[in-house]
Length: 409
Image (cartoon, rainbow, N blue to C red):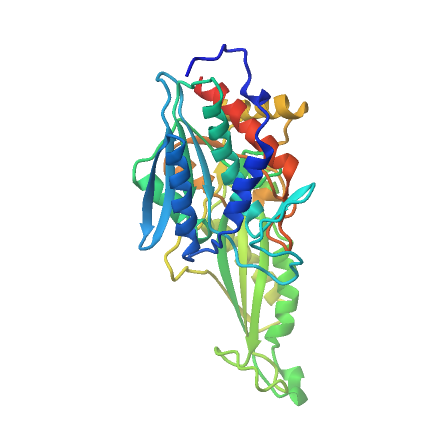
């Protein structure tokens, strides 16, 4: 390969539409629901494809039978290295699909499939970008590292395995779906449990009872609308959120539901919270305890116990992620987006995606790398007939190409 003059922009490349959509459709057709055998089928396919294009590539075992696919395109030397990161595992399908979740259907506007937004389109976009780079006359000075991980839905164990193996780059781009915005801040996540204990009586004497279900009906909206103390900036406060997603109520610790004529004396609420870099798990739990105590005052004798929900599988939670919007990687992505779309890129704590957890947090905190979250998809994320705008997918490829040129030389 010969070196292209510096003024030539890789963003000017028009990706092979049929080839790009063909790869993504092929990935969708492999069922990679998290912890299924399909994860490794897709990982092996990607390793073989990368090898066929001349990349160094390997299967990296995460746990027995589960593998990351890792690829590296060596640069000529002297340039910064760039890692792309994305996960292959998907959520389960929901009710309401009108197309085959694993059909890889393409129409004039969208490509459909389970996990296409979260996040096979992101993964395919950076593989296609490297393949387009190899077809061009440009040779970069820095290395490009491609990571296709499993276990993101178990707290990012695939990316943590890659980090533990020593895999590093100067910069990273995590391609979780942001509708091509540059996300520089997202919340950390924790799960919590609230156990309410009242006093039961038969409904004939319910005036003497302390109804845990009625109290829960007051507490849930109070939790769902709260923010947390210690947010040192308005941006940090903007990523605060709490939500109660499950409720169990009835008699006793077993929440027996066979006696509806009796007032329920125990209710358990299961919830999740999102918090900023200036906050932590302890302070968030204490804030929830304060809200619960306020509600309890309206129900004399009611007890509320708030605890962190311990993950019995040992999988980690995602800490908050934050990067300087003026860092080289963010500015490179901003510039690439502006070149491709001819407009400024949304940058910052981008809603609603700032409430997600991503592997970017592990790459920042565990690997001490600078990076940004930017990928195609998002608006139709994790819903029936999940889909991605074809235009966004193809533009993501162009953005990656321009970013590689700017960062890697």
